[in-house]
Image 1: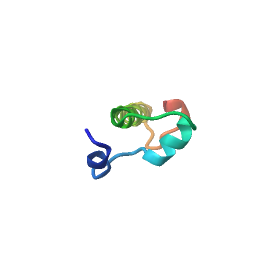
Image 2: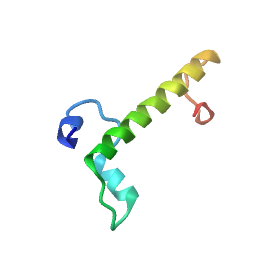
Image 3: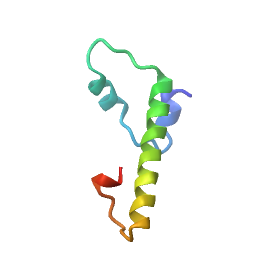
Amino acid sequence: MPVSSIRNGKMIIKVSDVKDAAGDGYRISEDFYYELDKEVHSMIESAARRAKKNGRRTLKPYDL
């Protein structure tokens, strides 16, 4: 899936920030952005489930 089509959706990550985090000398495939975004979505969903289970509506670092 091309990054351009992902960016029109509800992508959480910012492509330019991911490039910066990877550092100079690294190229990043378009598929990497898609998979990273899926992982971030999954982490947030898991954290929300844990917070709900504990009777909270605030996500805390330890929910990760």
